[in-house]
Amino acid sequence: MNKSEVTVLTASFNPGEYLRTAVDSVRKQTYKEWRHVIVDDASEDDSLSSIIDHLDDPRVTLIKNEQNLGQSRSQNMGLSHVETPFILMLDSDDWLFDYTIEKLLDEANKVSEDVALICGNKEVVFDYGGKILGKYQDKWGRSFEDRYEFLLANYVPYPRFYRTSALRKVGGWPTDDPYEGRYLEDRRMDVRLIEHYKIHWIDEMLYNYRKHTDSLTNHIDPINEMIEWNIRDALKRWKSRYEPVFRMNNGTKELASLEKRKG
Image (cartoon, rainbow, N blue to C red; front, side):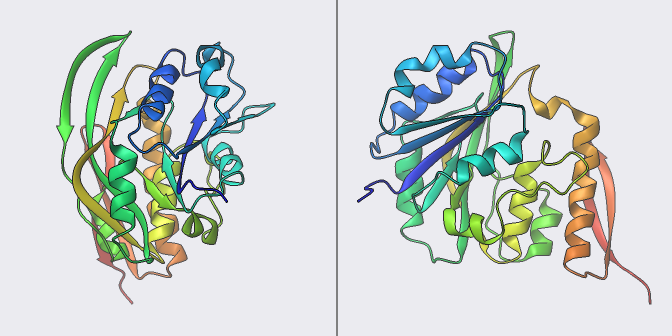
């Protein structure tokens, strides 16, 4: 019988030396029965060679894409190999605190089964060329039951500790957007989940989020396009009578309000 309750899922494309930090943070977990599924999305660097010892661990599964599929398709590949009731997402350039899985799993065993996502607080680290320029603790968060409140919060949960059955119920990460799931896969999934489930936040520092020059979050134009597309797609799917009003906040588009359509 599979003793593990948690699989860490990492989709990886050219992460360089950052991947080593990510996998080391998994190996150091106080919860030892983890599984780790790594999906290498046709990387062109030598990142996999830096984690050979990790790949030899029987708890680790490596999937190598023959061609670059993008984030959502790669995560769906990983999802198909998961046998545990919970999944913790770990980006290949981020890392966990030693206690992250233990605290999340403890919380998961307290909440009801209609909670599909548990999140907490994160430390944001500014890394440019391997040099740490600064960091701050992002402690803002809240729990959600209402889909419209979640949209209006413009909240991106970290870490993302998912109930595996919920991910599968909504069909995995969607790829029907203009970029076929290469951008904003986290927000697209979370908006899908809030249609059927609750999102539960705990006031714990649980994740290290690295901002660096190669991060996808620096691709501001497609990301801003997808922020608006995702919200409009959700409202259309919900057959909502609301019209979204957007604003810019430090270069990033966000939802300012929802106005009722006339007629």
